[in-house]
Amino acid sequence: MQVAKDPLPGATFDELALPLFDQLYNFARWLTQDTAEADDLVQETYTKALRGFSSFQQGTNFRAWMYRILRNSFLSSRTGLKTTVAFDEEQQEPEKDASTPESLLIEQANREMVQQALTELPVHFREILLLCEVEEMSYQEIADTLAIPVGTVMSRLSRARKALRELLRQKLQGGRHGV
Amino acid sequence: MACDAWREKLDAYLDGELASADAAELGAHMRTCGSCAADALERVQLKRSVAAAGKRFEPSAELRAKITKIAGTKPQRQSSWGWRMLLLPAMLVIILSVGVDFYMSRESSRRARVYGELADLHVTTLASANPVDVISTDQHTVKPWFEGKIPFTFNLPELQGTDFTLAGGRVTYLEQTPGAQLIYHIRKHEISVFIFQDRDGMGRTASEPNHAFSFTMEGWTQNGLRYYVVGDVGAEDVKALSKLFRDVG
Image (cartoon, rainbow over all chains, first blue to last red; front, side):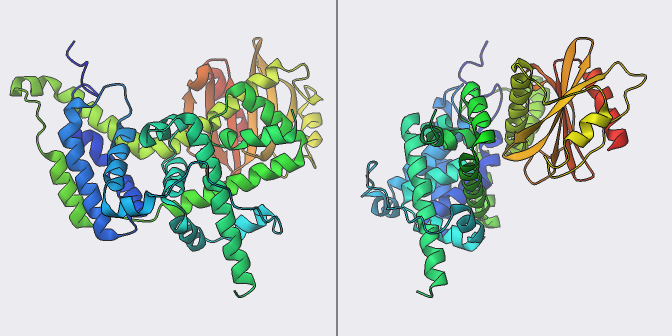
């Protein structure tokens, strides 16, 4: 059998990689927060991935592999270096203000508000929320993409969600009191 | 287990990452614990908000053209025309399946989760010492029993002239939504019929009987209600029972 090194017998790079284009672009824009940079990042990702395709291992996850290339390219870019420098896995969680029930809170938060809050989150929180909720990746896939253990995926996700809730709470209460 | 311990598992539960035994236990806990159920609902709302808000940016046509060109650059592997002609049918199948897979992955992963949960519910019900809360073979007893317990009503089919018998029913929950579960017997096999109010994201596509999770399942939406038929029987039986429900639904 000659298929051992192919991700799918006979499947070419474009057959596997092009269907991911729209999602990868969305993710790139969320990371870079800039159209031109996102364009460059996606191009760089496809170029690198094509070059490395022959070394891609069958049985590993192609989608996670593509996202990992994109993310590593971002992290080594100027914007990436600037935005991710100070991330501390064990940082203090924000104090929880329990004055508004959460269900009420989330219901009031409209799409723009959630988008704004996501933009303001530290990039490590933003990306893991996007991979989980938008890309619907499994914990293992997220772990493969971010090159971290599954346990860290769970704890980081939990902190990211808390931070997002807290940001939404601040926005809603700030808006209500006219601050 | 105390609520605090359950809440630590809630995220994994809602992300579809909790082992099925734990998930079944947590599901059972939430049926009796309003505050954990409310917490779960809040988390689901946050998940949905992020999913909706996160789909935001679309690439330009120019970038698409560029990437298509980059990706289409011939890879290092060379193969002769003879090989290509041989591989053509296989490649077509792969192109189609990969394309369709990616297109369908979001909907189908959701559907797989819903079907997985239904299979769990079916199994846990059968394993339970009291599989049904209302024990009756009479649909005119079972139907009124649900009044006030679930936020909708439904019709049950007449079974005269069929091999099916009604065993009873119970209130169940799928993704924090209450619904009815009816147990039917046929030739010593059990079939569950689940009925919920239809709402977004419940794996809405109508499906032919399929064999996910070693059960035969069929699902469809009718008059605002979402039906699922699940059992360890052949596709014909599931189809026949589904048809009886469709005719009265």
